[in-house]
Amino acid sequence: MRQFVLLPLLACLMSGCAGASQPWVELGGQRYKVELAKDDAERARGLMFRDAMETDHGMLFIHDAQEPQSYWMKNTKIPLDILYFDNDRKLVSQQRDVPPCSLGDACPPYPSNAPARYVLELNAGQAEKLKLQDGATMTFGPGIPAAK
Image 1 (cartoon, helix red, strand yellow):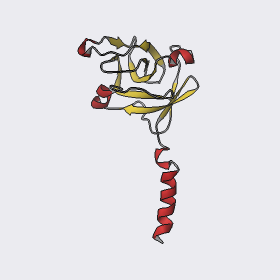
Image 2 (cartoon, one colour; image 1 turned 135 degrees about the horizontal axis):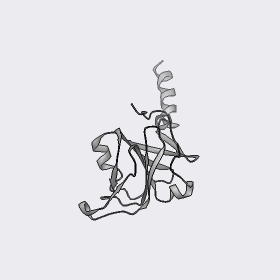
Image 3 (cartoon, one colour; image 1 turned 30 degrees about the vertical axis):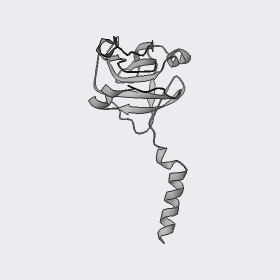
Image 4 (cartoon, one colour; image 1 turned 90 degrees about the vertical axis):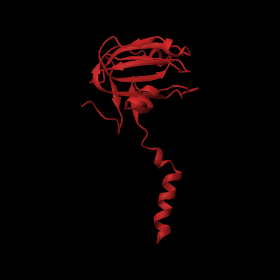
């Protein structure tokens, strides 16, 4: 009897069932698998020290409140588009093609031009490819908490 329980579980694990719950967002008709940065430690670490990121991946930073945000590229090795969204997941500000920075605390800030609750970092060039304009809406897949 035990093998009847273990076989379906093993089949599920081997077929990728365990990874099926990867969070995603959709923007400009493109779906991106995202890592979530929901607390101060995750937001501070961000995409530091990464040598590459797949084209259809990104990182979604979720802040506790909608307010002016500012990001920097300290110890970030890949160029990024930094996209700022309000509580309604509307694009309110963009910093495109932000270069890597190895200057430590001398790295410049890249602020939002309006209060934001969510920040999406994608590989540089994605915003241009999607022809994103302020007001574009980001859709959340299952498992991403909405604004409180």
